[in-house]
Amino acid sequence: MEKANNLKFDASTFVKRIKGMLSVDFYRLFHTPLFYIFIAIAAIIPAMIIGTTGMQGSETGALFTNVWQAIAVEKPLYVIENIGQYANMNMVFIFGGIMVSIFIGHDYKSGYVKQLFTTHSKKQDYIISKTLVCAFAMACMCLAYLLATILAGLFVGLSFSVNAGSLICALLGKLFMSLGWASLYVFLNIIFRKRFWISIASSFFFGTGILIIGAAAILGNSAILNIFLYGSSVYACLSSNFVSVLVCLVVSVAWSVIYGFLGTYILNKSDVY
Amino acid sequence: MNVIEIRNLTKNFGEKQALAGLNMTVPVGSIYGFIGENGSGKSTTEKIICGLIHPTSGQVKLFDRDYKDADVRAEVGVLIESPGCFANLTVWNNLMLQATNLSIKNREDEVRKVLTMVRMEGSAGNKYKNCSLGMKQRIGIAMALLGNPKLLVLDEPINGLDADGMRIMREILTGLSKSGTTVLVSSHILGELEKIATHYGIIRGGKMIVEMTAEQLEKSCPTFVAIQTKDNAKTKAVLSKKYSKVLIDEQDESLRVYDAKTPQEVVEYLYQNNIIVNQLKTDKIGLEEYYINLMSNKEVK
Image (tube, rainbow over all chains, first blue to last red; front, top):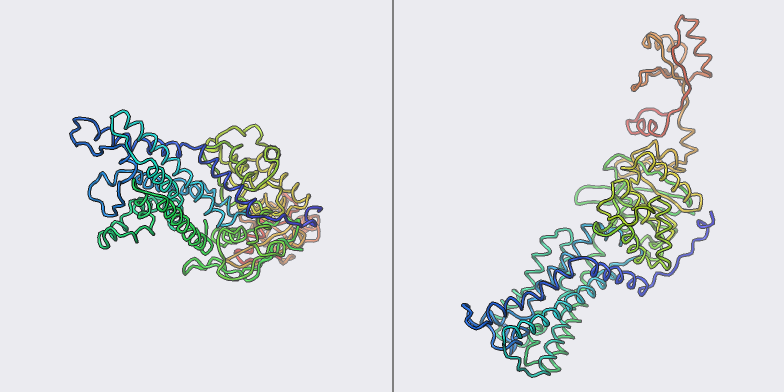
């Protein structure tokens, strides 16, 4: 009965818990086909768009004259005037939402969450770990999208002229936005955790920024829309500067904190499994 | 000291009340057999203990501390329904992930140890989805054993196990109990449970109706003389003149005399009444019969 009488408990610190959980989530990310499939999807999108519309003599006409238009719009236009303004790196965030839904949905389908929450793991750890890992995955998708855009641009022969500083700021802004988008999708998937298809549909719905586009139709091209995720994603454009990057970073972190708190609250107040 | 202490626990799912003021006490180092019909509230209780669902009201303490305490939770190993494993990963990788999640230092050694304990060391490379039901149950036990927990909560762990698997499970659980681990185990296979449990709790309609030790169960289960004759109906009529408690076993239709002092006494009495006994044995009602009688409100004692 030595163990029974020796009831000392090791302190389960946040660092210890989050380290374990992040290790598991990153392992899963790299050891399942899901991540690589979505990296491939992210790479195929610009290749398809530029490849099919950018070639000389294309029936649909050239959608882009400059390769970087496939990365971001030239000016922050919240109300889209043509489909070309929509077909840029922001699309990664839509597909990223589906990836997050499948990633989290698998936790519930396999019963992994049951294994997780019966141990020392806390709900906040789960939200933080999922958000960080999914943000990383979406940032990787953005980089795959960038690489495929450059290759497709070279193949088709589009112009590469750009203000390098603005381009870097736009790219950094979009990479930072991965965190905000990931937190939104994690939050949606916490709400609909027991309804897999609804969680995918909701991720797609919010990922397309339909609500903000609707608001923009009323408000017009107002900078106030930058406080929303979609607004900030649009704000990271080819005329970006340091302020744009800062806005994207602040908005992304702010929303991830808000969604993180809300998601933790919901998980704490509801039955997990 | 009690490992689990539950007081006035209630849980409502909408309008349905799953637990209606449950009280439960699981002493340290015990193997606590948690018994009840389907829908009686066993799994709900276990899920609350494991932190998967929230109680509507009541108090749950593990090791005298709040059951949500992360430090305490780290010392609880759980198998509820089926293990939470990823189908496309190997048994080894699934266990390694759980070991990582538990922040176990010597993960490989620990995983090797628990696989050996459940006799699964040869199947570590198999994908989880290719494992049989019995193997999956053993993987679940192995997962629950990671980190050397002080409390094990096992929901129907012997479901789907073959005879050898059940024997292995018995050996594991009794071994753990001897080393001081407390085990809460629910099962419908009462014959198996009776072989290992040191304490019992019987739940009905979300309330604990009986809690007792194995010794108390032993005392509550009366011995009887079971006899088979050519005409059991006639024999019963004869025996009833001398003995107050003569019943016919519904299963094998043998006669049971509960208040005979010795078997010889019954044989002699029947011989005097020209009845020849074909079979005779002394027996004792077991946990299963005790439970069935209790559930059907039959007199046990």
